[in-house]
View 1 (tube, rainbow, N blue to C red):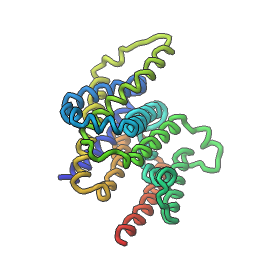
View 2: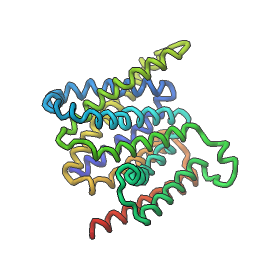
View 3: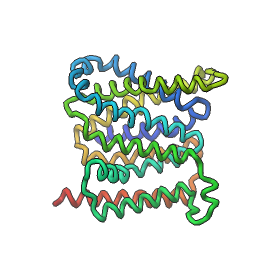
View 4: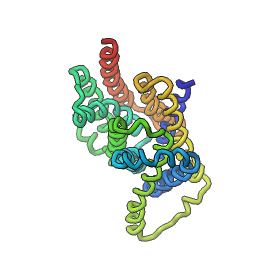
Amino acid sequence: MPYLLLTLAALFWGGNYVVGHILVQGADPILMTEARWALTALLLVVLYHRQIRESRVLLRENAPTLLILTLCGQVSFPLTLYIGLQTTSALNAAIYMSATPCMVLIINRLIFRDRVSARNWLGVIFSTAGVLILLLQGNLLHPEGLRRFQSGDLWAMGSALSWALYCSLLRNKDRRIPANAFVAVSSLVGALLLIPVVILWLARQPALSFAAYHDAFFLSGLAYLVIFPSWLAYLFWNKGIAAIGATRGEIYTHIIPLSGGILSILFLHTPPHVYHLASALLIMTGIGICSVEKKASRIK
């Protein structure tokens, strides 16, 4: 059962790339991110208000950590992803996301001074090469690759970096805080932090039209983002990790970009190219090298 929960959670997060890509073609990423977390916060606060009330002292004591994690996970991660999906494909964004385990390795080294072996660094090199191949669409030595470069790729890379920061800094979360209460409060704080951004965005718009936001198609897509990636995915993930542990559960994070890429090909009809395959293979090789190192360390 925990393996099914972890798989479903990863699939729900993978679907975020496809649904997000579709919605941002007619909706603004800033308003969409705000709507997502405002509705999620409303839902989760209603469902878990007792846990929140019982944990209010712990939540107050851990306010700085909560704020930093919210900025990375609830604000920066989805906002930069949705901005990027306006001009890059969901397949590209999913492949960038697959590089996060190696990003976490570097962040842990820089912030927490974790030991990084030569084998780990080799994995990082492979993963970085994969990102560069995707970024330049396989034209590493030809200037044509730079001309075809999309700004959305940078935003998508920023999204992957935000998620890597969130995963790395999550070790600072007080384990005494119930997971559901933590996600509910994070959603609420994220929605509040986005309000000034929304106000600034609205002030800069010469003419506003909210017709697209009343469309049944948009509302159904937003409902997916609220129910699946924002609520059930976190719920299933937390239950699965609690059952089998973070060490055994971490492999399921690789399903997120894999499912995002496959769903992009199936539902968005994104044509895969040779450089997509080469990029994915290099990144997976890098992750595999780092994973072998972790297994060897655990055996010792």
